[in-house]
Amino acid sequence: MRNKKSIIKAMLSGVFALTMLSACTTKNSNGNGEAIKFVTISGHDLISPKGQKLSICGTNLGNWLNPEGYMFGFNKTNSAHFIDEMFCQLVGPDYAAEFWKDFKDKYVTRKDIEFIASTGANTIRLPFHYKLFTDEDYMGLTSNQDGFARVDSVVTWCRDNGLYLILDMHDAPGGQTGDNIDDSYGYPWLLESEASQQKFCDIWKKIAEYYKNEPVILGYELMNEPIAPYFSNMEELNAKLEPLYKRATLSIREVDKKHIILIGGAQWNGNFNVFKDGSYDDKLMYTCHRYGGDATKEAISNFIHFRDSVNLPMYMGEIGHNSDEWQAAFSRVMLENNIGYTFWPYKKVDNSCFMGIKRPDNWDVIVNFAEAPRTTYKEIREARPDQAVARKILKDFIENCKCRNTVPQEGYIKSMGLSVGQQK
Image 1 (cartoon, one colour):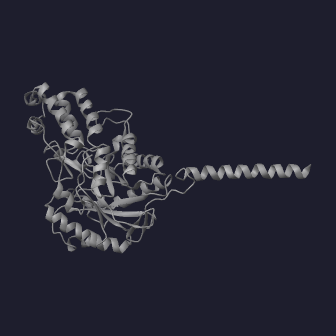
Image 2 (tube, helix red, strand yellow):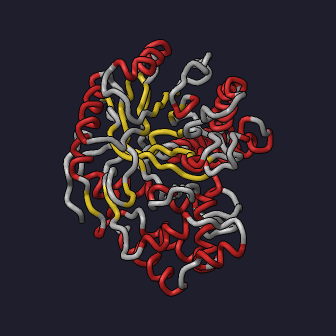
């Protein structure tokens, strides 16, 4: 009897062990019991899940989840909250909220991702505003923000089209840059505010927890272009950057030890002298930006020297807005020096992008209101155009920004070493 009980006990223990092993494998597998493989780092190189060197080549989905004025043709009204306030003054808050929903639904869709993939690109960088993951007022919503739903859609489209995705917090709590690009209040308050820093880390931890088993995501870019060069205490701010990067990295590693973390330099992702310690994580890569100047190796020698000194990958997260000839020459320089790139941006009004949006008839009516003085209610009333006219123009913009109605910029795309695909 004793032997029979021992056998039964051993059998039950074995079943329990197999059950637990199966649960652990499923949690970290593709559903077939196979371990999920992610993009990894080997010295200067990125290595794909198939074990091959990966050279990033693609574009940025700028303006979609972090509106910028110039991509609408605005000048003074140049950040997300300036644009939203202008639209509310123009057509009222309820209609503005409807516009933002349509904008998010139509500006980037599956067809856009299919077009990007058709060019031969392999990576998309997705800039986003931190408010998409809070209950703050943003793009027509004041609660139940749709950040995860929006990113989920891009993850699915990228997976279906063989693309990698980089998540880029373009607008951090408090503002990390101090200019329009971070939708801030004119100063990088993030670097001086404990409350904003804690929110910054908490949001990244929440995102990492959600996407920890998603191999389509190449990595998390913690913040975009920190600390503009305009401030008298710039060096003091620079000294606070690396400790904040370390803090956010530790928050992510509490829940996700698999994904690469991308670190951008100070002053438009250009100053890497602020970094003293690259040993605090084993999956770091660096990201630089550059617009204009000489299209030579010497022009990026500081990036190459830093990359070589830390023996980690360097990636050009933003470049563009130049002649096709300059872009083609500089793309060759980056490839020759093992620096991948995502050109900025995918879509905007006019040109200098992958897909140009045709300005609707009478778009200047909207631009004129955006540029007009609106510091008093009297000025707002005097500048506001007819409501029916303004609302129709905004609807026409939504129609024009759809993938099927945009214009592929062939020279721009070919200058990156890509080909012009067919719209689907």
